[in-house]
Length: 131
Image (tube, rainbow, N blue to C red; front, side, top):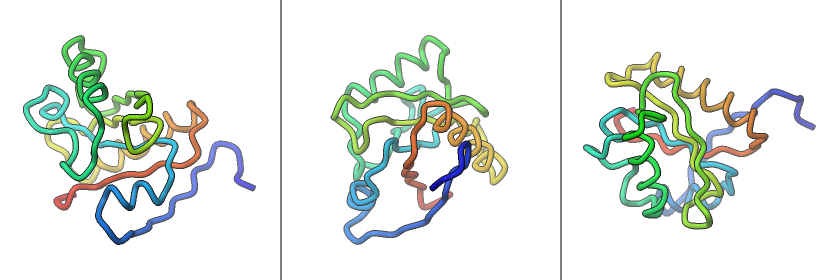
């Protein structure tokens, strides 16, 4: 049994690409590290191999426009996918404008804390090749 307020990390690879790996993991949420450029719409949120659904993309753009999530350091947002994504929720984690190793670690910490608050147990993270 897992201790309260702990997260178990496990790294897995699956045949068939990112979408297959995420589906195989059966996560409660897909964690997407997001830069301000991605939040604003200047760059895509995810690779084409991961379908988020128009509603999720539109909600991220709406939040960026209203300044409730802009992809900055320390920001998180938990969005339901309403069955149109690879998991019940997408958990956005801000990377800031110039993400380095420290920004990636901080985003992981903030995402994990948000997941604990929401009582999510299984997270999938799709890292870009350049991460």
